[in-house]
Length: 123
Image: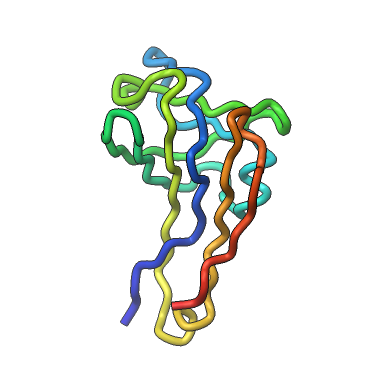
């Protein structure tokens, strides 16, 4: 049996761009991707702390150090520049893996820089 678990989370990032005319995706500063282990084209769930909307999309890599959190395509209608978002990725683990897995979590400051890194306890 496999269980779904949090793989990584970028907590309280600030949306810097919304482009509804683009193909889709969320562009994330490369430093945040590197710190969490998120990868290009990976599926993510985005929760908007301002509007309470949630949407799924996939990751594009933004320039490292740019602070970009750019929501593209139809999802851009569900958020806004300046909104705080939580970006989460999940994984499927067997019981043994689940007992060892510790999700990588990054807390963002106002400029989308890493203010704190946390590794949650194993399940």
